[in-house]
Length: 238
Image (cartoon, rainbow, N blue to C red; front, side):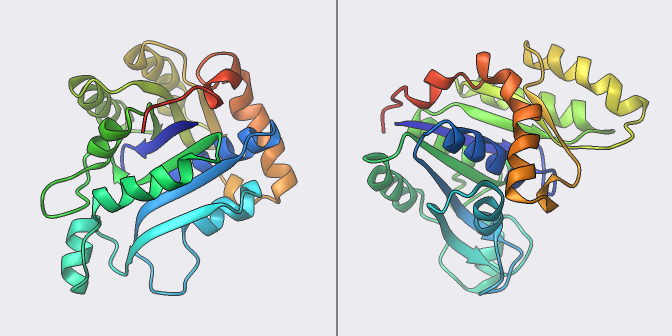
């Protein structure tokens, strides 16, 4: 199986829609796909979460949410505020091991950015990616502030010896301004490769058929590089 960790340079920048796009493309290519969200914050019990949006957009029903906390904070802080147990990365890893046997691709969507804390011990998305020896897909915003936060995220990946799967703009505006257009070239320079894709703003509101078509236009050209078909078959040791 293959594991891909999806993180971002912040919150509300389109990580879930990008996760759904990768899931839709892989499923459309005949891969068995599971999606795991170890921690969901900012939602009360019973409300639809990120994995529900992934399922609705991609058609992938093999989705798994771990801990859920009502406050829109980092998981460790949200758990403390709610008086609930924090995420245990050991439990997350054990769950992923169980999923591994019968899936071609497991997508792990983080909460917030790469170094957001899951627990009081300081465990982060980066720590989980290191344990899994999995590449990391970085989702970024389109406008001002993007370059600094992206550079810091990429430096953190390199410092930990983590593989960069690619950089994707999570919500590309219909009428991009000068900053957005200029950022594409600068993001490519930071990453050392072309931007893997840019998902149009509002894609999360599309029907599954239209969403798949959008994912094909936005990301499938990169399947010859960053998202090669064989990447969904390679084994990443668990």
